[in-house]
Structure formats: C-alpha cells, structure tokens
Length: 325
Length: 279
Image 1 (cartoon, chains in turn purple, yellow):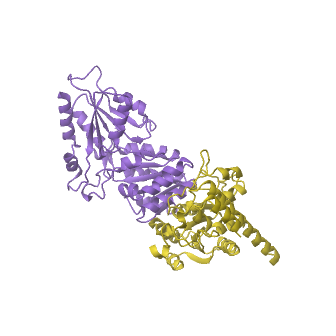
Image 2 (cartoon, helix red, strand yellow):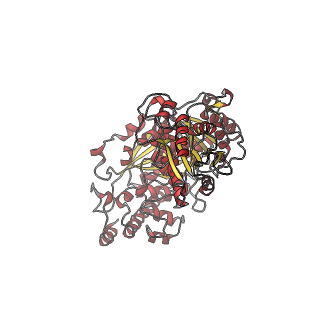
Image 3 (cartoon, each protein chain N blue to C red):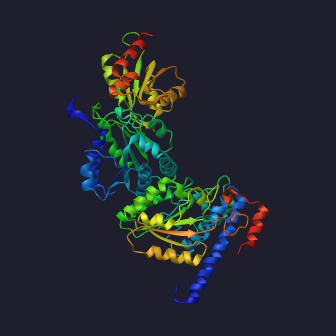
C-alpha cells in the first residue's frame, strides 16, 4: 500500500466539497453529528452553510429536502446504516416518491460501507443498504472502490439534480484507478482488467470478477496472481447501462460477484443475475458476500472477509477450483 | 378591510360563506371518491378558507413555484380534500377536475400528491411536513426572502417522533418565518388522542421547545383569520404555532364526535342530507 495514494473517501469528499462551496453559494453540507478530520475547516469557514442537525437522521433527510426544494445542492452526511435505515421512510417519501414529480439535488453521504467498521459490530455494519437504496425508484446509487472515483463523482453530483446515495468506505484505501478521465457515470462500470484475447490461457474457464466497493481492491489483487482473470468494477449500482454491461460480461464463462453486503437479496449479485437472465445467457454465476446472518464475529476486516470467502486468498482458491472444474 | 366595522363584518360573512361552500363541495367530492377521508377534511375548512380567501397566503396560480410565494406544506395530506375546491375556484386547475377525483386519468387522488398545482410536497405518510418545511424556512432565510412557510398538521400526527426532531431544530435555529397550524381535532384513527397519548397542554410542549404558541377556536373563521394575520406579521425571533381547536367531521352529524369517524364513508343519500343540513 503506497501511503501517498492512500486516502479516506470521506476526507476526499469533504475537501473537495470545501473547494466547491467557496465558488458555489448554493451548496449546503449537513451532518447528523458525524465528523471527520477534514470537516473541521468546513465547519469553521462555512458556518452559515454547514449544519449539524444532531443525532437525528430522519430530520437530516427532511431538512435537506426542504433546502433542496429551495434550489440548494445538499450533502447529507451520516453513518451509512443509520442514514439509510433510520431515515428510510424520509428517503422513500421525500426523495424517491416526491422527486419523480419535482426533482431535487440531495446527496446522501453514508460512511461505513459493508464492514468498514469491523469491530464495532452489527449495528454499525452496513450490509443491507445496497439493496435498500437500489430498490427505490429515481435514486442513484454510487458505490466507489477508491477515492479517485469519489473525487470524480463530485462534479457529476453537483450537476445532476437527482437524489443520490454515496456508499463510502470508512477506512483509508489506496487508489486503484489510474486513468480516471474516460470514466462514464451513465455507463456505471469499468473494466479494470480485460479478458485475455484468443481464448483462455490454460484451456479452462474464462472467469471475471465483478465487484463493487472495497472488494474490488481484493479482486484486483487476486487477478494479479492468476493470469487471465477479468475484473469489472461496478461503481454505479443504479442506474447503469445494462446493455453495455452484458456486452462486457458475455466474454466470460463464469462471473464471480463480490460485494460487502448480503447476497441473494437484491445486491450486486441480483443485478448481475437479472442481466444474465434477461439475455438468456448460459454464463454461470457465483456470488460472494455475506450470507443471511448478522456478524457478531470479532476481528479486523480481513478476518471477517476470510470467514466469508471475500479475502484475496479465498478468491484465488475459488478461481482455481472453477478453472479446473 | 378593517376601516369600518361594517366592512369587517362583511368580510367575515364572506369567509363564512366560503367555508359553507367548501364543506358542500367536499361532501360532493366524497360522493365521487368514497375513499377520501371526509371527517379529517372537514375540521380544517376554516383554516384553508382564512389562508386562501383571507389574503393571508401569497400565491400565484399561474406560476405555482413563484419565488415570492409563501410556501404551504400540508402535512396532514389526507385531510386536504377540502382544499381541492378552493384550488379549483382560485384557478390552480379546472373546476371540472373536481368531478373526476380518484378516477382513471385524474391527478386528484384520495390522498393528494405533489402533481396537483398548489401542493408543494407529497404527504400521505404523516410526520414529515414540519421537517421539510423547516428546511425550506432555513433556505428562505439564507436567501433573505420575505416569504413565509405555513404548515398544517393534525394533532394525531404529533405522535410521530420525526415531528419533535423538527420542532427542536426549528426552535434552535430561530426559524421565525415558520408558522405551524395544528388542526387540533382531538381524534386519530381509532380513538381520542388523549386516550392514546395525551399531549395536553400542547402550548407548554411547544413553548419548552422555544416556540411561540397560541390557541383559538378553529371554527371561528374571523378568529382564525385574525390570528394568522398577526402571526404572519409577528417579528418575534422564534417559530410560531397556532393551535386551532376543531371538531373532526365538523358540520356532519354522523361524523361529529364519533371517535371512529376517520374512515367513515357516507352513502349518497346521507351526503345529500348532510349538504341540506349544512349552515
């Protein structure tokens, strides 16, 4: 891990929003009493447009909607599971339903994707949020795997007058995107590692790791160990270009989905499964993530990942088994 | 209007006539759309009439999102069927639409939504209006706008926790451009509110959260008008609440003081009879 390219997504977001707030008086930043080192400058220098609503996520969303109805661009910042689940009806009513008639620009910024808050336990894990946000009409769901994507998404989020959910990791992570300029947020995904040309190198199965958020970091490491494995990072879970995604998927025999969320319940795996089904594809699908149980096991993130086959070593083993199957 | 007693009395008579007409029209709509919450839409008639015909609310039917309009958030969405005839009368939409409520192709439903010209938000789910209104009020203050934010909420809705998050917020942030009206009809779906969660005395609840509270008879349209007028021009630094004591189902015998009137549906002949008896 190169410390120079390692950053926390929330700090990148806040530092960038700080710069935008200097030039754009329409931007508000609201927090449900949740901080970050980078937030201290913003709180000090924009005291009229930074508001701490208190530990009150429901009100955080409703106040944000009110401001946005007055044509402000609002970032509403809180811990991911509390933002998405405590305030679910506020999000459903005032962001999903109401914006179908009257669009607003509210950006829900949830920090602590998946098991970023590993040892804090199940209350602070966010394993349902992908499914919950993805099911809501009119919502954009942004799930970045590195901080460069976050930085790139800010301009897009200011311009696009829709409700959005930012699913940000809680831990410092290295950057994985090198060429950030040809990213397309309407397309929603990026082929980080392309498939080998001219057939599988070992005569076995052509395999692709399709991942969102932090697991893309592990997927990339695993792909470096095994030649000929593709990696696709899905950074917009909704809306995305399903047609183009299928074009990318159909080069493979096997798709392995990876996500820090409950599988078989509407997450990335369900999205990929649906795309394969819609295209009457014979491509086989393996889903990696968390099964239907909350996690009381204590240990760091890698330990929790090992228990659930999401760590680099497990991914490599699974690929090896599939290749020779 | 207040230069002479005669003018004032004529004006109050005009508001009373409007209230009577609104009740009749609301009953007619209920005949077309029996799923409308009639009783809830009869307790707030004088409030709507004072706001729209009393010149309290600044609005523009031809430019519903005009920047200088007062914002009116109707948190008790289900109880706003009585606003349909008023909005039609004031040219927000065609009067013929009133004959199509909840029919295929109509935009007027049992519970109003923000497609309807004049409705800022959708509030079928309760307890959201005050929070959104507080955000609007804050936004208007930051713009140095003179526009006010009015909110209509039912007393049953006060059981929703998010209401109190918003009450605390708007008191703390001194949102003195925010005027909340409680349609205090004292009955929610299954019972009298006091038998469920007794929140009286309401004024005290509000004042400890830094709100200025006033209580009036919500069916005395002259009083509703005068109180709203005073509150709108009140320069105090905190948000204001008008507790309007009302009767759920006001004007209709089968509904008044019936604790289960919330979902009571009147038959066609009962509606005709009720309209005759209205005064």
